[in-house]
Length: 438
Length: 159
Image (tube, rainbow over all chains, first blue to last red; front, top):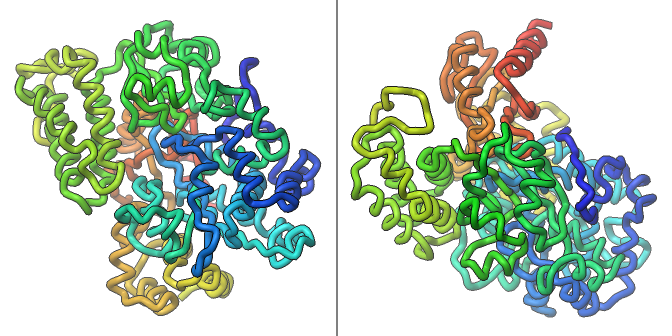
């Protein structure tokens, strides 16, 4: 449904089958499909994990945790059944890549789940797709049925005597469920309230069994790694940041779209060459590098940045989910901060106080501020409130709300001051400010 | 309560997991799709199927923003105004929908044809601004294109 785009600098690995009809299982097989899992069937679990470790694949959901290492945390022996859980609850604002994978290459996800299952000794996999992506659920249901019909899934996969079952699952609208422990709660038919950790899901996960949880893109990368070899995949990116990833360009760029770039690709080229520059010939003001929960970059910072996990970590930031949102010079940062906070306030489950109260007060303060009712001490207060949420909440949602807020209030403080003393937003021609305390 | 087809689907779904209640969230969504909303009767029926109390089911429902306990319009218009959509006119699109449909956020037209909701990111960021009508995505919208989309649904309802 969504339009596909292309750029010469792209290295199409995960997106190599996009637009090629690979939802059809026979077409998928023609395009080297289900070869990787057959290869994995002849390997030992340790050999599979080592191949993934060699690839230096890191979690594409946003956290960037090394996938091979995550798999190696699953205990070899377990009294309870082990599970593989696919996180397809893509809902980080700015991120729309897993949607394309599920739409164009659902079998790659199934194959990735199976390989993960072989690596950790799980015989069941669940593919959790967010409720809004209903058409993708239909695609996935058919893909799973087709794989069973071919004998690729079931009691005797590829005639190997091994067993693997794969199931689809859907959410019903909740950002927080993208957090792995909340995802498990949701899959178990409960409210998506996060669990306390440790124990980590690799030891105690779904229904108490050891569980590997990976993002859709992460698992869709795995069959390619098995086929091309971990080293080749690793070589696409800088050391410890192997491979390619899907970047979702959105906002004020001329050519928004989902592009597969090697990790380490310069942000400047991503915006100006791949994205075709800023709309209406305007100047760049800010970039959200990887979904709304990452520290925003100023234009000066953005053009110096390389898009890999470690380059961001060095500056104290996060590469995040691949959702690159570009803001032009006419964007009001106060309004932007308010919209981001409105989202987190809406999505906070209310389970823990710093997040529930913090997001609510920040939304109120930012609303008042943007409508011209702010006072000077509010600026420091916004920063103070957000800083006090950091690391003090049950799950990362509190951090996710605090991080963009801190970066906006620190880097664009002047814009907050411009809104003081009842002045209308300088970026909007609305004239009279809206009533405060909305 | 449900069609035979859906009832059978539910019977299968509860066997997909080690515990029956694990099927609850998808079941609620599918039930809502068929019945229109999660009525007391629907909740009671599902509670039995997954061996929970009605209260426990309601507790789950209130967490998920796509689940409704009141009737919605035949066509539920969901306008995203999150960051990527906002930067490309999502808020203006919402205002346009409000005046065109004569209803506000989470309201339903008197004849039950359209309902409107401002929603959070629906994963259409690179094709913003975007709207979902029921489950169908409409992307790269302008107010004029939005009118066409709404007209198409209005016509469809008359057929």
